[in-house]
Structures are given as C-alpha cells and as structure tokens.
Figure (tube, rainbow, N blue to C red):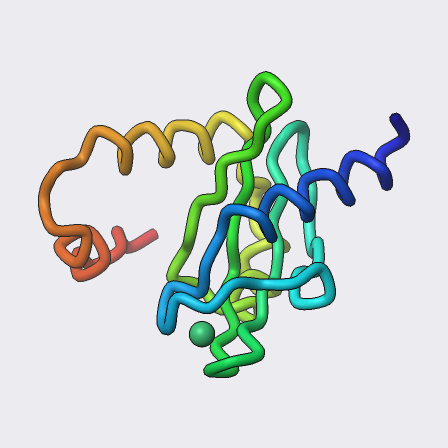
Amino acid sequence: MDQNAISQAVIRQIVARARCAVCGHSFSMSDVRVIGKRDNAWAMSVKCRECRTQALMLAVMTDGSTRPVYTDLTPNEWGRFKTRPPISANDVIEFYNYLDSYDGDLSEILDEPLAEE
Ligand SMILES: [Zn+2]
C-alpha cells in the first residue's frame, strides 16, 4: 500500500470510530483532513458539520488498527506547534497510554497549566 492509500485507510477508520467531542455527531470522509504524519501517527483536522467544531485529532496506528486520540488543540494551534521540535509517534503513544491509565476526571488534566519553557 502506498502512503496515500494508508492515509485513506486511517481516515476511514477515524470516520468509523470517532465522534464529535462536543455534540457526538459522526464524521464523514470529507470532514477529516490529514495535516501531518510521522511514522505511524497522523495528525488530522476534523470538522463537525453539525456543530461546526474544529478539532485536532491524533491517530496512532498499531497492528493495523487505528486509535483516535482527541487533543484540545485547534488545527491553527497545531500549525504553530508543528514548527517546533517534532512530536514523535512515541510521544503520542505515551500520551495515549497515559490517558488510558488515567481514571480521574479528564478535565483535571486539561486544567493543568503547561510547563513554562
Ligand atoms: Zn459536533
């Protein structure tokens, strides 16, 4: 499979699994756009046609299946961050595992201030 076909397959899996974090509406292929890719991690801009929320979603492919990871970044913020040192697939997986093992209220994580550089 060439890279483009793989990206299409990832988008299809995202469309099948992911729902809008705000209103729960499903996405269609045309709502999802790949804006970055590194190793087996994709950064995607998703746009909900129901509530018009735009979100940045990360997808990590492991063993041929894709796990969507929501971020609280907007695609525009991603545009700024991606010029910084690259996020590796391992960073994304680590983040995913952290979320997976975190059993508290997710809003606590999001409320934590980012470390100053
Ligand atoms: Zn929505």
